[in-house]
Length: 61
Image (cartoon, rainbow, N blue to C red; front, side):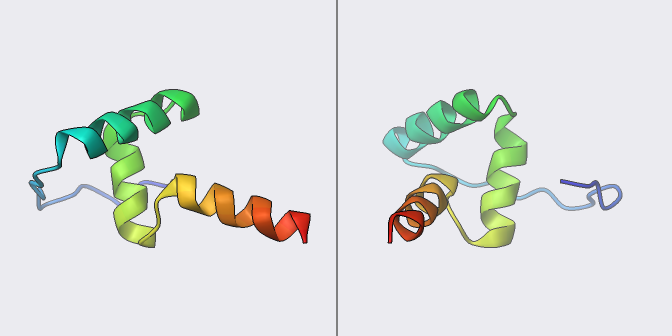
């Protein structure tokens, strides 16, 4: 993801501990950092694991 300049606002979010653990697992699998992954999810409105499942199901059709 390209940098769009310096961010001037910080979003603080409380996340359920179970969801955070799942997100951390995805981050580790993708070899990225947590903030980049969360930022991508917020911007796209998608959770990468769901996108992967969708693409796999479409390729099997």
